[in-house]
Length: 505
Image 1 (cartoon, rainbow, N blue to C red):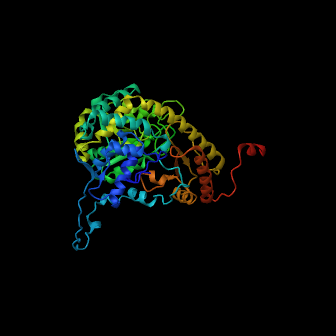
Image 2: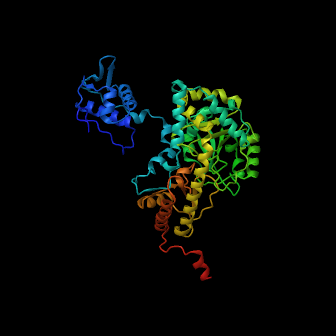
Image 3: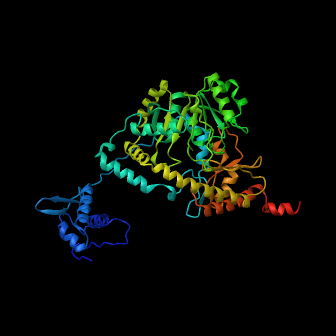
């Protein structure tokens, strides 16, 4: 302990030593222990007192200077800086509040948006098992490789990455995305790629570009709730197309309401929420229908590269038709907080989408784009996917095994080949919202099918995810969910194992 400064370094502290010094000086300045004008020891003297290297103290002083805590004068020394004192003024009396309800757009009254609020989880805490979150657990996020990529960008660009990005996105990143898609059989040029702030902004841009209030948008039934909400908020009339064993039912695409639609939004691979995949034959039928009807296809490939069993899906729609609007994102296979996605779009509409994008946000973060580009250039994504796919397989297997053990009769699901979600098919007339609430009371959160319905008709299913929890918690979540389902279905006896069933046949 140094009694002149009061600073004490703790080697067991995870913070770097320079940060410990800076934090303690700043705290003493705020408390008045180091008053304004207090002179700190020279860096060499303070380093000797603390038993550390002088460069450590110099770095701490640089941090304090950047924070405005200290000021240094050559030949005089380093002093605690004065801080401006502001006296708050009394707020003037305000008139009564505005009539916000009268001013808001009628689009906000959409029933699909209201569902999100009505079914928002209220349970919280460490014991609540997350079977509803579509994001990886923290241990599967590549924080250290991304930190190295970010530090490289900040060190080598000398601040150039801290400005606004080009409207269409960083050229190097667009080229990398194009190269990756082309290698996967989707022929794309860099100029075809528009960088967006996640795939959610891509959906919003397409809604703004194509939809006027009352226009029809075709979606799968059920479909991704985020897309349903974006299209509903734009004033679209949603036309839901149920699935058969191959994909969206073609008979539902014949009526005039479908053929006059502005867009057909679909997820051919690991569809959210059911995890199903459109067959090769059905993809060809959908492409022919799009050409005949003149309705553009929006292909959302959010789960690209997440092939758990090593079997790639059929070729992308965009690989066979350059007029398909292809969307992708790095949220599910890399880092959700990046908020970097993209649209591959035809030249005829590219300029309009770029203008809309620029009007919306003046460009996706250049710093994040540059860091992601460096991450890809170093080959970190390949190593990351190798690790996470192995973890997802283990988690999927744990969840499926536990579901087989704990779920009651009448609840079915299919083996998950790709993606990070599993769809439970409930018996007819089962209320998925009731299952959601019963599961929540037992400390496990799931997503009811009603959130994925494009209409007011509830979908009898429950979406589970296995990316946010380790295997042991997934097993416990399945056990709790089994209890909740028995409560809702009125079943009290556990389902017998297959060996026991065979023994009584």
